[in-house]
Length: 126
Image (cartoon, rainbow, N blue to C red; front, side, top):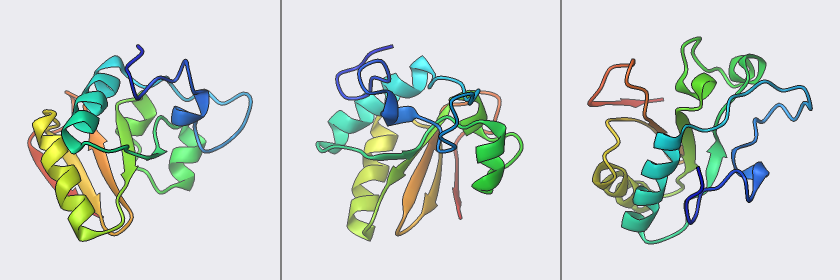
């Protein structure tokens, strides 16, 4: 899927797994994730910086991700968030976009996920 601001086809580094291995088997980002990130970006009114997207199992373990992480299925992204005001505005935007799952790790990042097999209408902290 290609959106105006989130297109792995145009910029493969945007959602590249952090392992950097050529044989990496991380999945592509889901179409639903890309569509909702685009809506979020429009509601936020400024660029969103993806710090972690889809991951292979090895990189997920390296990053301390859970064994059933949405990153392993391409259904999650971590977005840079450096101040409380920035996080507040991004949370308003992610809610406007319809995200039903997000985690907060200020002042570093917000995790947004679109998995329908994980609990819905949840927020957590790291």
